[in-house]
Length: 390
Image (cartoon, rainbow, N blue to C red; front, side, top):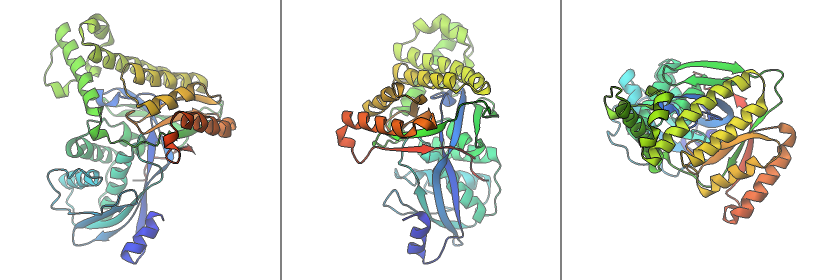
């Protein structure tokens, strides 16, 4: 049953519309945006659908095909504290949209995710698809920047996830057959077209079979470790420093890091090492993409994945196994964890002519290592796509 069918089952009528927001993948630039780094991304042709209709009494009533509980609140009475369920993302979205524009109309709707949860920015996609619908019934036209900022505030300030704006930016700015190159310090971006000379590629998604929740993971601690490294480097070098939560590694030159890195606690040094080397990989990745060299681009993705394991220390045993398998699979240009790297999935750029062999090999070797995940592991082949239609 899809969201449109479920909507009719609940309300006895068709929805006025079905909104859509794509998922995203980040081939290079992982764990970088929260420190104002540069990132690369694609939107993919799978995502979140939301069947809905206006509710003129101001009530928001949302059901998800992925979760049992139906959630309800009023546009003028969003709970000030999160309730620790799946709908917190939407409560936060309602709250921060209402701070920008007056809301007079509520909404009834059913959410449907096309792929399992974990690693594809499903939380950002849920927020954005909901915001686009809530804006439509209230006759509000958000700019791209307003959409990104509102969605980010919902995650940072309401749900409590210290993420950057990579996810939201990919889901808004991306364009089919283009690579998004985004500088999260000033929000400048470039859409780099696929070179006609580049070898063909598709995007493979390998789900570990284990879902994850960022707010309950070590994600926020890693962000604090990066900030701590930046704060300490400023102190060691005599740079002026202000508030801890306004410190970013982007503020600290690479030369300063190299000079004082041995003074940092090991964990802080490793997090900073990942950030600085990932920043360089993004730059190299842009050049490789512009040159149509997908083999070089893929090697950088693999290097990013290795640094996420060694320096950023993310990855469950399941994700590490998927990464290991990808590195030895013919036809995989490059792959890494998708998302924060705490459970979830891996992504890869692949040669479409090897598609069947890749799917068979990865599934066979992964399930041999984790037979308990038979029936839970899954894989999908996707293509790049346009961002959300505002």
